[in-house]
Image 1 (tube, helix red, strand yellow):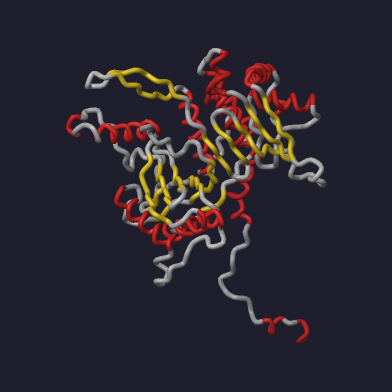
Image 2 (cartoon, rainbow, N blue to C red):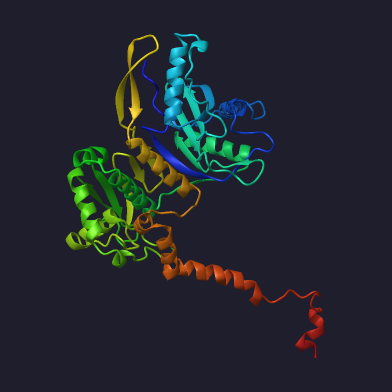
Length: 416
């Protein structure tokens, strides 16, 4: 039987930011804690805990009513793709062999190496899910808290609201929708193309890896939005490398305009060539603050500015091996395509953690020393001035008097 797909791939998720989860002295990233929280969520969705009254969730939601009754709820620690594949392959081998006969068991998923928590809701006719994600290297500085800054949800609206409310009450956290900025979309495609370029792939492999790039431009600030809602653009795989080469030849500095008073425009060879093409052939200034990128899709992901994400299954190459019983078997191995997903995963987590680290071609090429000089030349000047202004503010404040003012009657001019 084929291994189940990795939960992160092949589904359209709704993105949310999550503040640090409070759990006190107990640990949330353990199998026992996951079992406890799964049972509590199941009771909450069934309505069993509300004063003994059975309160059904999503009574007005047709899709949820058609799903049938809730059968099961599970919380599991989620490892990376390799751990997922090895764990399910080992389970199938354990059905045939003794556990003592297996010497190459996979590394167990624990609190140190887990990516987060995989939540599954199994109904009679369908299933829904959610992922609480983090970077395994990230740590919280406060005892009793755990940072899982990114929540991916795949549920109907009514069920999603109940689920988020339950998480907020249980862990005393704030959960808010995560909109994807235009800068994040451009950073993502620039990072993917940069990684593919540095991998030195032959032209045919490069084209098969990236396929095509599709994007949708939006014009939210038009006075008459009904006349032009969006522009859909598809760049064929044969033309992507042409855009990259052209973008490397274009000057960098003229396109470093600001998209708003707070956020500098993300630049890279692909974005630079795309902006020049639009301005020359369509009279559209891609870097203007009134133009946004609403959707972006390539072979790795599909993103929507409203807060939607879909990651595509990595390409697999099959290696022929010989099992310990002498039989030939095929083992799937992830190609370099998986490295692209890992880099995008880190970029997405950085966005959820409010860390503004967009892709910058000059930093990736010129190194840290040049980045420091760029900051000194004024790239972060306005923000630095604001910080200094806030730091100097207390010196200009009028001190609060120690004694209250005299009664109004004592200095009322009308009484004299």
